[in-house]
Length: 355
Ligand code: MRU
Image (tube, rainbow, N blue to C red; front, side, top):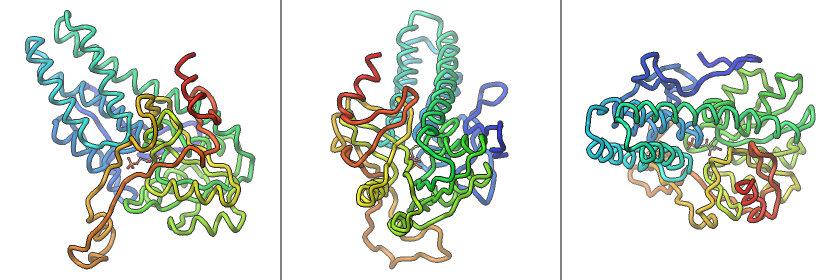
């Protein structure tokens, strides 16, 4: 059960006891049904990412690592050449499930490195090492999230109004990124007033963020995406906390569609806006936001979903990007596990990897 009472944390991705299956809660069915999925077949694992049964950049990375572990156990009797060929096909297929969050290729490349560095070992041993690496990715994410929560909390005052978008809590990240400090703050006696954008088209804000914050006892108010300006104008927002799915080397970053709108509004109203995420979300090989591939999703998510009947005429043309890029000039800072990064982002993001 999702449980965010003080001191407890919900695990968004777990291995079964025999380590042959991955267990996730089906995020598409939340908040109405808590359905757990046990997965170990390539197509099911691919579809779980594609359909957003597991979602959120860090969670996708963790899930990808464990996916390679449960899959490779099924062909650990092959000689290395054949094993690596199958491994590469599976890895590439999983990597094609969604394009924007860098955590997916980042985690898969970590697993690939383990395989290549140990190619002279017995294949069963290589698979065991894949399992250890997948667990390490998960462990590191928990640790990074906890540090991000601490750094994020230093930016907040008791009583602050905070606007957020999409879902960046323990469902999407191991311990929370953008809303992690709000949950941590509540546990330490702070009272925030959080406004959660519903986050069209898939309503992760309405379905998941409000659920997590409610369970954690945080005061949360749901708004439609188009209401962000009025709550800022009313003086109810002291700061915006958003997540990130890929941060380019110059500080432009992709996050859930609607984030750039919030950043433009925040600038207009003079409200600071921070993007919170682990350094695994920084892609130093990507020079700027123009080089980030934006996922386009099924038109039915706009035209039909969430209604008893389709909301738009049949075959209407739809444009349904899942993410947008916020220009670095609009952002106040990035909150990472290594600290808070301020402009100039091209210089200061690079420093994170030099230490
Ligand atoms: O399409 P999703 O639900 O996988 O989108 C990811 C997100 O939840 C956000 O963009 C988030 O801010 C970054 S990942 C915690």
